[in-house]
Image (tube, rainbow, N blue to C red; front, side, top):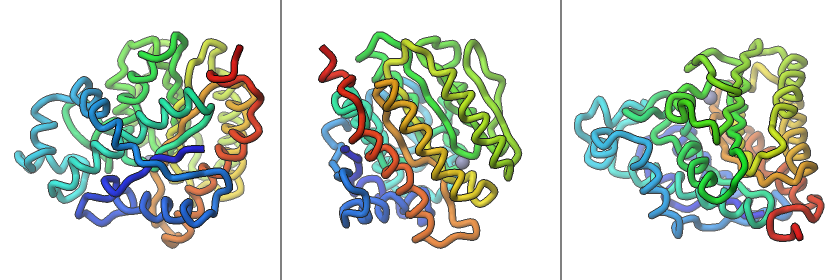
Length: 300
Ligand SMILES: [Zn+2]
């Protein structure tokens, strides 16, 4: 399974889990900690990523990300601005686009990207700079006939994603959260469910219901696999979450791509945070290896 990452993901000078953890996770994958997963450079997709970013974000905001002025706009994501912020945004978005393309061929893929779903057309928010989820979903919509599903299981609500996709019915937004931060009113078939921050049983119950809402005509599922429901939600529950998601998508033969999303050092060490995100990589790699011959390339 291809997992996309390059040095551009950590180009920001601001030191924070969102801007650093992908490098540590890539190192763990390169060390062979996830059988079947290989790190791949996404830079061939930089041009596609930039075009996609320009299509969903305001020009004033993107100019601010490039040059750092006006500073309040350039730092809406909550980070101190430096030129590496724009590099990070472009490369981590290229990775999501690359993962979509790889998932269409291989069935599963992922990108070690974070900081996506709170970004709005006019600015960053909540450690999110540009909305690579919507860029990748729109890219996928050009490649397949079916609906593109954004399954967001990060602790926080994806209000930025909801605002950008608006009434675009080719993208279905399913959002399971444990915090009401960035909540919104879903439209159409979109769904937002917020469960209690330590309701493990309710969390898995709602996850199962949400997986059941993935339509038969889904052409690709993009999973925003935040690990920030922990520590409220137990590690064992997140192990189960990743297994159920990866297995459900593999059984249905729908191409699936994941990104890391949230995951912070609240009561856990850097090593423990890496371990949490490796749960996602491992679940998708394992489910991908056991996929029936029903993915795009081998369907005849
Ligand atoms: Zn979050």
